[in-house]
Image (cartoon, rainbow, N blue to C red; front, side, top):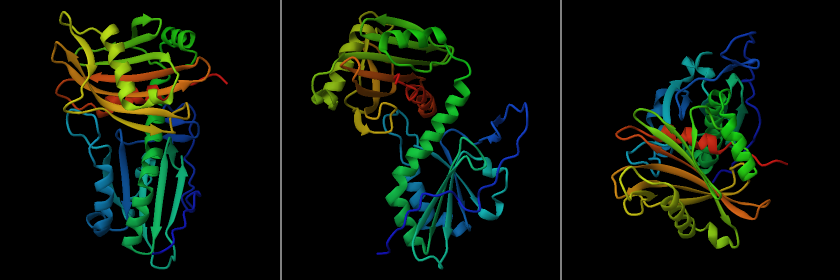
Length: 335
């Protein structure tokens, strides 16, 4: 087995500075604003055979797998493909780029990565391998890390659009009540403000979005296990989130799409229990996806949960949930 040498360096030969322009709304500093659809990754290959063969299969198998917790099947990412001879300056402004290179002259597989090379925000990865098998092996070993960085770019890009228009009143209330800041865009309003619970909503004609923030005393690490987190969630929602029908209330769907927990270190708090799943109503027929993050707050001794949920019947919901996830990732505790 060939030894893999992972080099976290800038992409040599790719350090082209974007042209600067004063007063251009499509500029971020001296960089052009990056392009591309939400969760879209541009794959650059040397030829179509690479995309149609085992390399493309490996990329598709990972990035087109279904996103867990959605009522309709939706892939975790979108993929677009171009051969390197068509990789013009226009395509170099894509926010997430994966470059494939097979070079029989290299002895070891090398990964090069660069940030904001041609646009901002942007993340570019290039995997150089001596053969197709080595390339696929390297990709499979590091695909999770690639996705983490691509997801970070997606959140940054979303917030670059949402952040200029914020609801300062809600943000101030979160700071006063919870002791941390969170960027909340305009259009949201506080639907409920209880001592241990906040419900922040955005209502549109065909869909609605919501953010829950709640806390309970933190006494034991067992509280971070899935059964305990769901038990607290259901209790809070039954108490504070009624449905439109008399006696109805929100709860967690546990049969068809049971909630799944993943412990992550990429959340701003440094550690969080991420739960993805479906919410539903007891006594009614509404449902939708949610994503939540629970973490201990050392300042208060509480276990805090921030959650985003979507209601958009008969429509895809992955991108809407990603917007809420991006808002949740703005949680920031004072130093």
